[in-house]
Every structure is written in structure tokens, then in C-alpha cells.
Length: 444
Ligand code: PMP
Image (cartoon, rainbow, N blue to C red; front, side, top):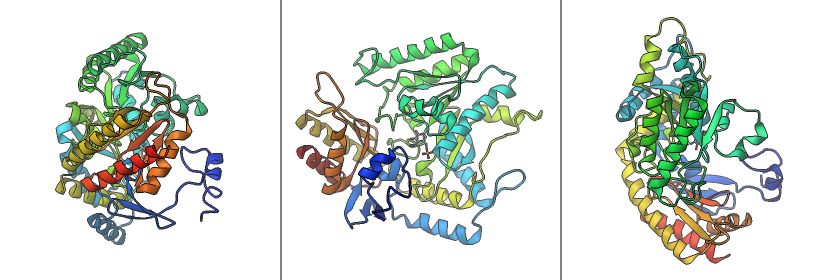
């Protein structure tokens, strides 16, 4: 397997030539919050799979639910005229879970990129049903990440993920993110920066013309872009601007839904009611590929009142509402709520964040520490703090490698080291992540 690792497959977001020189770690087992590699080395999974394994790797009720559903009905489609019992039950549970966010319907997908694509497409359709043919553009945040389909890639705020695949969707424009450490305004006060970014959004809307814009999409806390929590005034400000201009608000909650931020959803963390929430990842904790675009009452009313045929949904996936995925999601949702994982996410998240700040005090390489909202944290590494010049490309990988040998998996994204462990980890597990990172920095 080691010899074939990078020869027989290409790995996402990885240069094939890099994989050949430096083959990816081969993970062969997972138990609790720990993973084991092909050499038998066991570590705390500080990445939680890929921000998704909130309940850890040994969640028996989820395994039981999947097995039972596999035995009973492994698949049936939810296209035109058929449904399945398990997915209806799930839709009901999701409706209750998302009710405080004003989200009352589910459209099922196979993952996060599909959920984003669904929200983008249904946003345009929403306006068309209302006779508003011109509202086709999308706005989003620089540094935002919205998956890899052509629509999601078009609203992606990181040019590295776009340029290689251009031309993408026309009419997608990106505004500055409220990223306190680096921003075009040189503003270090988060509240003032939020106002400047909101002004940039207003300006972009004025420039494009409000009546040409279908939706604004944002992550409540930017994830893959380097864990960037906005000031608390930002997302409510976005919501108000969207409402004022007839623009739909899409919350990309692929990472933030189901407790990761210490609140049940990122929208609830900021007190916002979006028109769509894109979910995936922790909806099944990695036990099955699955997702849901949640839809607001406001949007649902427009679709459901239309009898002219304009609201017929010309969109969907073979695996929309897959019964085994639905069974996994139902069991995950029950377990997530039974364990009230958001409480542990908030408490352990604070410990992790405080520990990272202490690490920053010791290591000049750590320019910025971000977190403070549950179990999403990042270290941004710099060559020196005064210039904020990003650290040499090789440095984050070196820290990661030593941290891995010392007992914890963390993730590298550009010059950031990212942590998003399972929400069920203990204080002792948090300490393992911190001491492993400490070893990583000490080894440089
Ligand atoms: N949106 C966000 C915010 C994400 O973090 C991701 C995945 N990291 C996606 C969309 C895409 O999800 P998927 O990889 O399941 O297609």
C-alpha cells in the first residue's frame, strides 16, 4: 500500500508530484477520538477527520442504525413520485433542530459542495418564480470556501481554487472578509473592521445594482480560509443589508452546523436567520456521505405557492435522501442532542484556545491565534511578527510532522495550522494536542 499510495490515486487539494515525493499518511483505524496509521502509530485526531467527525469514531448507535437500514432498504430514490420512510423521519427531526434558525424544509444532497450548489440554484429559481429574472449574481467573502462544484468554486474567495478552472460562473464578486490580522483597510479593531467590510458590501451592491444580485453566501466562521471568526456585528449586518436589498442570505454551515462553534448552528451563534443553510459533514459525522440544504419559511412559501410550474425543481442527486445516509443522520442527530455536544465544544474549545495563546507567547513564529468559538482554532505562522510575512512554506508541515509523531494530527492550510477535533474529546485530549504542537515548535 505504501508503494502504491500516490501512484494509483490523486489526492484532493494536493499536487500529484508532492504526493509522490511525500506520500500521505495511511490511516487504517479509528477509535474514540483517536486514529491509527498503517505503522500502528496512534494519535488524537485534532482534525476530526475533515471537520466532520464530531462524535468520534466509535459511535455505536450510528453503526447500528446504518446496519439496520442496509438490511431493510439500502436504497430508493426520492425523485418524482417516490420517497422513503427514513428520510421523511429525518426531515422532521431537522425541521425541529433548525426551527430556531427559521429553516423549515430540507433538500437532501450527497455532501457539502452539493448543498452549496443546491442553495445557489434554488436562490436563482426563487427570484425567477417571483418574476425577477435579473437577479442572477452572487456575492461572497474573500477567503470563503464553498466546495468544488463550478458554482461553489465561483463564489470561492480564494483565487487559488478558482484560476485553474476559469472561466467559472459569471457575475460572482468577492468582498473583503472581516479578517482582523490582515485586511485591505489596515484596521485591527474587529468592530470597526466589521463596519468597513459591511460598507464594502453596500458599495459592491450599489456598483452591481441590487436588482441583479440573487444571493450572498458566507460561512458564519470562515473555516478552510484559516478559521476567521467575524466580529459579532458582522453577520447580523450582512443579514440587514441583504433584507434591505432583496438579496437572499445563504449561510454555508457545512462546518459550523451541529455544535462545532459551541452553538447548535453558526447562524444561531450570531443571531441570524438565513434563507438557506448548507449542511453536510457532521450531519453524518463521516459515517456516510450526505448533506442537506435547509430552506427558510420565506423561501419555502414562494416555492410552495406557485402552481405555474416555475417552481418545479430541476435539480437533485441520485443520492438525494439516501435511506442509509438518512439513518446515519438520524442517529447522529439523536446522539448529538443527547450528549449536548455543543457544551463540551465550548468548554474544550476555550481550553484549546487559551493553550494556543500560551504557545504564541513562547514562539515568535505564531503571528496570530484564532478561535474562541468552540472547537475551530488556527495558528497563523509568520516569518516575523512585525512584517507579518507568512512563514516559509515548509515550516507548517514541519510542525505538523513533529506534532503527529508526538501524538496529535493537526492540519496545514497555507501558512495556517488548523484544529477541529471531535466535539467529544476530553481536557486530557486537548492537552495532547497542545503538547504535540509544543513539541513541533520546539523542534524547529
Ligand atoms: N462549504 C464549506 C464551508 C466547507 O468547509 C466545505 C468542505 N470543507 C464544503 C462547502 C464542501 O463540502 P464537501 O467537501 O462535502 O463537498
